[in-house]
Image (cartoon, rainbow, N blue to C red; front, side, top):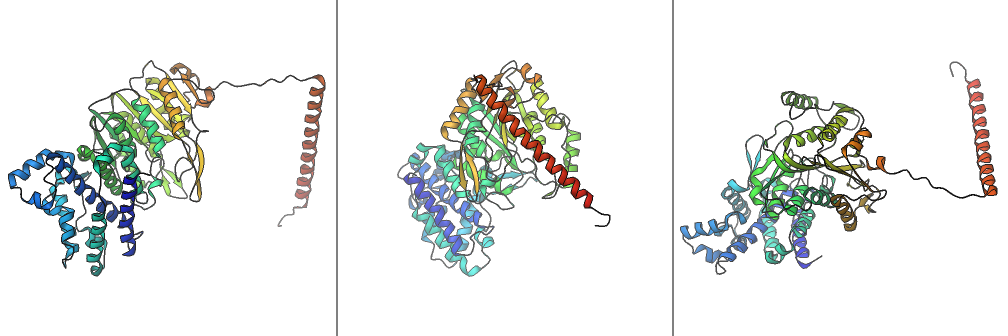
Length: 541
């Protein structure tokens, strides 16, 4: 761990400790305090960094305050979208100087509120209900802490923790995506979905995200492209492909039903120099209320597999599908009764149809799906797979090891779609035996090493077959196997031959006969025992 990473993780831990000592540890509002306090610190230091790049003499509250209105406006124009725009009184140094004020908690809340209003046009997230989710919550502390008497001291402790740390952006930006993705994961690892639960439960492992991005883009150098995830969560897949393409060469589009995940995605975009795409983030139900009708160049997604679904929600999806046969040509999967969740549906098949519909004429997609999809012989899954193969839009499949996700034992595969692959080859890679098993709390998980990742990526992109790992096929070969996309069904069957002497052959045959005779005798004993037990049964026993 480098020094910058240590310092920033220490800052995150200090904010968490302030929450813990104030009774917010594990509280539903804790993630807001942690993420929004961190975001304020980041925005403050990033603003100063951008100002100093323009004029190194203007780097404090005092020097910024001396600028007249026109000079300040010109400064903000030069900064553009490289940072959120701040007024001198928004700076952390100014806020720190006010910490002895009797209403300091109110000053803290008003500062964040004012920053949110000032930056509303660029940094707000839109919802399906046509409202905006602001950069910072209004009255963050007032609504998080019920006890008014502790708010002032709480605000002081937060500001002191923020003031003690300093972001060295020059060094951090040189380290790039890996640095910021590590910090982001560390900060939000316990905060993701609205219903609670840990981030890892919904987080696509970095190894899968990297494999998806590297295979999807390959050696191409795309520019000015649209990248989309219709079930984005906190944006792991989007960040990986954006950095593979180049953050200045793509625009991010997303939608997710969870407000908490959508807020975390915004934070991810800000940390990774993708603020220009924040206006394309939508909080809402993609299937029922899709807000991105434009065709996309690249799509990445790890959609929910079989979430709890009410009868009303299913009816609504069915009505949408009936009205949009081009978008959902194979319909909505049936509602299923489940003892654990009540009713559910295989929603990933609905998302998959939406993804295919959303692709441009030469678009590409990588989707995490249950491995059962690649061999299903009936139902909607089979129809979609057959359709994609008949269209020759499949680029390949990578079947991942079991237990690679934190809390699901479902085996997953990544389906790669490429509309420009007509007449091309299909790569099927079986990575199920790769990786290393490690303990993750009370559970065991499997992790791909960097060398494992590279083997998959290189084999797939070079279209090289590997014994017992991958095959390269044409579409006719796949049709002959009932459209199966399972690599194992195409591996050569190995028959091992051993040279035996007559005596060795006789010995083996006698051993087989002895074992078989023993099994027959055991079977006869069990048969007699069962008949004896049946004879003893009487009516009314």
